[in-house]
Image (cartoon, rainbow, N blue to C red; front, side, top):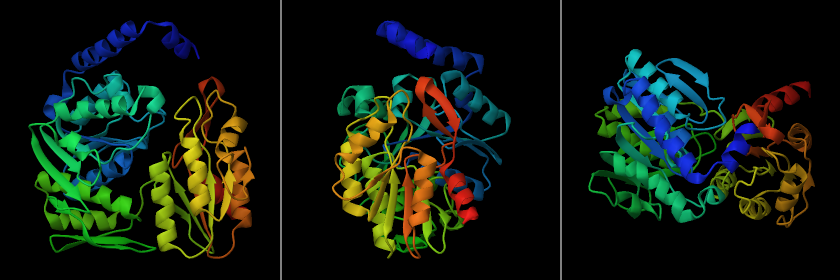
Length: 410
């Protein structure tokens, strides 16, 4: 609360000076650790965490010492711990300290999930990026940045720093991320590129595709995960990892925490997913419609705290388009009234639906009404360990544990 007030009353130029000074100080204190590492930064609106996870797993399969940070967790070699910061990119001291720890543990590579807000606050400064990866770009964080162009321009700053650029050619903004005199590698599904996914199969239990007659199989579902795999293949191939090792690693990954994570598989299915943008939500809903036969029961909400209120209308429309049963609930309200957030979504839902503010009760209700072969999809939080409420208070939370606990009582 005090931190928020200080930020509001401090002149913008002083905040900007403060943000620029801290990474310098952090780099000096930890002796510029990125100079001893190969740093790969992954940015985009969606798919960042999954892509970092895939790249990390492939490096480990190749017996290469690697560290990485995502919104889900921190990892240095086999040591993994949860990211409980409620921010994807740690502060300047934390990130430099992490890089120094990676050096001490003998890591050769570090894979970082890079956010527009992190770049805006200069958390990426004085990190020597070797490779920048672009997953996609869609409308997001408009209030925080003032406009979509500002949001996009923050992302582009990463690509000015890196030596090699790896870009999703199918995204409409790809050209902007390729508009640098750097080494460039592209991936795609719909047009010719360096790594084009072809002969795509999207099945209930796995997905498969080919690149240049090499077959890749993954337990991750949906076309959006094919894109994440293509990005990871492009990165790891560029680093000289043998294609057979990449194939083996992708096939061995069972799940990415909170990303289309199957929590219950019988007699009905329950998925938990982080989807918190309209594009991500539609990707999840489309995947389920393509691969499942039963009714689709959707539990969803929207983030508070003035974060992209425009999404609420889109969420209402998407749930109406794809879902058979709709339960609107709380997500991360921050200082907003949870009832108002739910009402903002509800106004745009065009079919009968339920409003259950208590998220635990909403999840229980979805399980109670599920029948054999139905599919429940709970979106917005994924594997996040907190719910953030008034005065920035963090309440321990895990959608997956609530599902398991309640299902066990039935």
